[in-house]
Length: 333
Image (cartoon, rainbow, N blue to C red):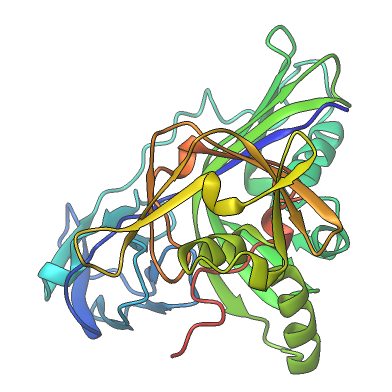
């Protein structure tokens, strides 16, 4: 059976200094210097976010668990990414207006597939086809530009505005700022070879939040997820979390393949993997993991470097936006 390769690129930045604190700033138009009200300010792939006030000002708090960069965005402007927020404060952020190329914004391009067909393919690989993925609704599909490249057997997409996703199962409203999306097909459009997408995301609870439903489904999607696996890898507790490692269908000692070392007496660990191995969760779900680099860095919260160089396939590789949780899930406030 052909295994699909899946890569989600998240803009992670490890910052190892500093303690819990707040970050303040003001967001202005780069030409007029006028304040931009209701600009979004959030830590990528977390539930931590605020909007600017009438003066363009904001204050956002974070803890040592947060390693993601700070994103500042407003519709019609180029977003800015700040990675050194632990070493600076009270900053002035100048946003530049975007200049859309109207020739590229062709919603109904004649490329061999109808927009309805392309949206169906996009939803399947972006949201996922599990029960959680099927519970998702994209609220602004009109902002998504999709093209099918028949010669290259490839589907690409980008969005004119952050994609708003209502995840009914997980009780999240996800704002996903998609900057790159690509599906490669094997023989035809019904045989996906690989999927890659890049973007930043911000999670909020739904307004009509159902606590019981959220707790049940979020716990269910967390167990056996890439996030839980990376946290268990860090703590060297794979077996305790019902993960088993196989090579050529034979069960092996995980620590003969995963080498975990503390880096420079810090809370960061260095992880290497000698060769691709199979992962079984709870004796049911099968996945494969492969490192394309000699080593990665991982922290207690599941953040890791070289995200584009880690390949998952199988159950973990099939997890899409509909099944993903923010990096601060399950962490103390």
